[in-house]
Image 1 (tube, rainbow, N blue to C red):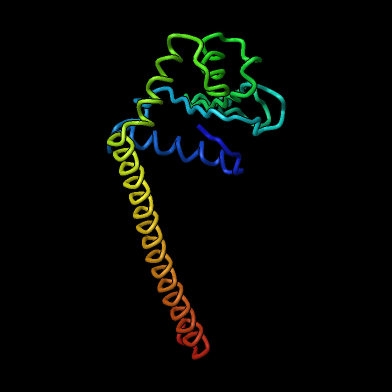
Image 2 (image 1 turned 135 degrees about the vertical axis):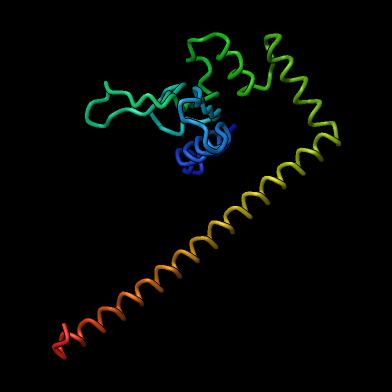
Length: 180
């Protein structure tokens, strides 16, 4: 659920897709095994500003949108404050619950009960906070590792550039001396 539009949501969907895809396959497994992937965002406000209650995205060819990439990845955005405009009754009920916090079906009553339980159960809240902290730490460490790898790659490139420059100078000197 995305409560604020901090303008990074489209890139966040790309990140979530990468995370899901990397977890979906084991090393060496064929891409054919990737299943349909739906990334769903529930937002209170219309982040795209087009007045729609639901936005559905999939990868299409830019010059001919009739050509679908077929990567089985779909990104759906549900604007829950526009729940009245949603045609599918079951989805509309969920969105209405998120917009009003008033359950009106057995399913949303169950969600409401679970939300209240999680909000009042200190052990669950503590586990959630610990879990979130572990995720944050893992993301930080992975970024640090990626930065270190990039630094090493940059250093290797700099060394290779120096070696090439040295070879070029040596070749130029040999040409000037008539040895080449």
